[in-house]
Image (cartoon, rainbow over all chains, first blue to last red; front, side, top):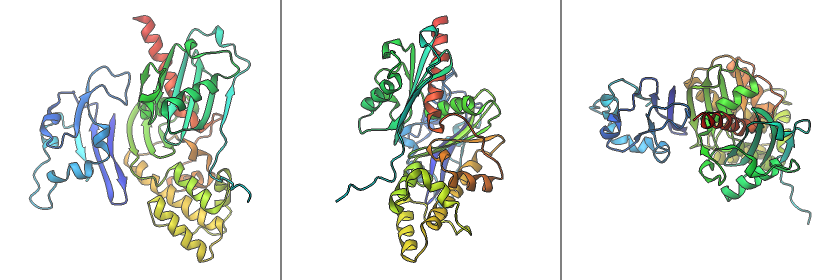
Length: 95
Length: 291
């Protein structure tokens, strides 16, 4: 499943996409993210899936533009820690 | 002074299938969808739709949940104790006192949309009270991709209620009236409901007729959700759930912009979430009995 967490408002599109078919629930993104955006647990959008999966929690979902901001400077941007930490390459950002 | 008419107020109602006897059923499952604006309860007997209610959500979620289920059961002789498995969904899903499990509205809408529109549905757009969900699913109603926007009220039922009230047009008539324009106006530019309302007030002052203002708002709303849908890749067949599915002014404009016709259903588009929850309830009860 392609899970898009985030929002679109007057200032743009802010979505973190997790490909749950690739995600193995290892939790590397949870420890890599300085903003604490990720969590690993039961997939809330797929009740019949048994394996744990990475999600963006409800508390974080509506403020990722701000939480992710420190990892996204205008100049000399490094690869995002969450994207880099994810071995199966399940995480991407829309902005 | 006469009482002010509430133009935004849509009809609350209940229904049950009098030809069915729920006591014959092996599994009675229920789904309760406590949304930000409306609440629905659906009761299914062995996976067949038996009863439902559709009402406005109050300020107290547990109370809204109790009211919704009791209203759905009214006149059927059924009580909450007769429900084998109840699933709560929607904003207030964790506040359904009698629920066995809470599931997100994404999973429930896909499952409910699959039941309502049939297995050919691949793309579902739920236009709810205060959010908008784009879901792509397979022939069994399993989610393949989703996106939800609940940070901005543009493109939501509540936005339409605000406009119905501003223009003093009963909410059920907004769609048809907006389609009565001779020439399609430019959509309102503001994406925010509050500012779209001020923009509409300005247009009214300029002398725009009501139908033209509504047309400008409906097409702004349609355009807004199309950009959300594009992110999950729209595939045929396409269907809309939620209250806005009843607004032909938005639906027609959406169809035009997507170049796709939305499927029709005999069911009430507002019960999709609760219906999906009740279907999951049946699946989970079956699983529970096996173990």
